[in-house]
Length: 550
Image (cartoon, rainbow, N blue to C red; front, side, top):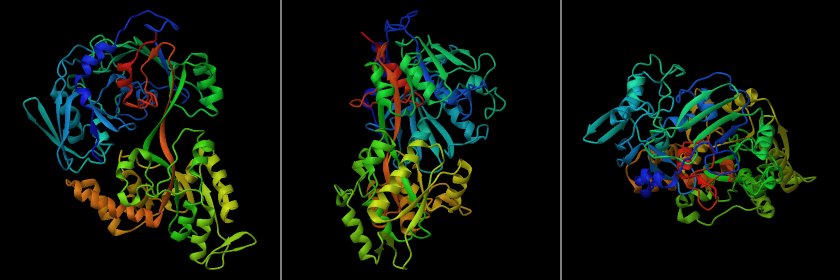
């Protein structure tokens, strides 16, 4: 699907000026002028680095890179999946998504007072072209052309299924970065290097916390929140304590028993679950028994309780996926008409009939396959992944009681699990999907042979292999024709329904805990203009909308 552009975003500067009413010096409880403390449960972050391109930099781990370095646009991973122009006043793709034309926003300055221009955009992307910066996102950028105010960025392949990766590239100042010898490693800790267009600037860094203050030159006008504190706690328990006590205001974390441990503590405490196009998914090894039989896989799909996954394993922090297409409600517009309303449910009688028709029998309540062997398998999830460890136990119970299948719960360390999923030596695992913001993410993750390189899998762990599906996936991702994409989707979706190569359990969510003691305007269930996860690029959009609590 084409990511939708938010029309109202073009006037964002005016909107920011209206919603921002910053005052300074306030303290907690008054609403106006209070700092916001953003928390993470990742333990001590001991090495200072403000480089937004380094995944292990403190700026990336804490998430404060997102409020210093801005992007061309913001792609909402939830809600209406819309695209909001940001550093660009407009963004427009050509028909086959190999060219992106942007118009730089006027009146923007870098936090050091230097004017922001289109040269900064071209310079940022040219770093990938000339090899100065590693292309870790696989942008395959080929160059830019300038026509008046418009800049056209060209890519070597279609970005239809990777629009967010392009639009979320941090834009950096040419006048500073052209003098950085190696931007792949430089921590930007020298004086005057951590310069961005974002609403906040770095004020103080320590191993305990990071403080950022409002950028007085921000193109969007004054924001309500004058100061941000980023703190990393030792674990979820410590983070929860900080949230409940008011020591922390905003976080992204999976908190067990969140109703009792957090929400009940204060009516100003809120928790938002934002479903995305990804999903927690049961992957089965299609190359070995018992999962080399599609009848067995279909029977499992009619037995597994997705709502139990949501309610018990995820404690409500997900949304059950019942469609036979594997797509969540977020992508219902990509469900083909012939599959609209066709959903799985827990129907043990139907599952048993499917197995009986395929030659299965039961002996002493145990399922026996057509070869006369008892059906059993192992499901593997790393130890300590508490939600999916719980789901393992649920699956073992559901399949034993419903179908007479003996399920062994395997909880190895990460290394052993990772090796098995790549090498194909597992029987079943729970894993996430590639999230592309459209149907492609599910189907490439579960049926695309491109992920198998040197007999090691990065996705498609079950090793589904159908040349017609592979060709259709390539067409979906690269065609300039909506009709061709729809025809490709028919091939892909039909193959998924017929073969049941994997079983999505629940939409993978972005989580956000926040309090409204001092500020209101956060995303809500009824208005998911962004997720409430403060580590996502949309944090600048949220900060622009916050106003003092009355």
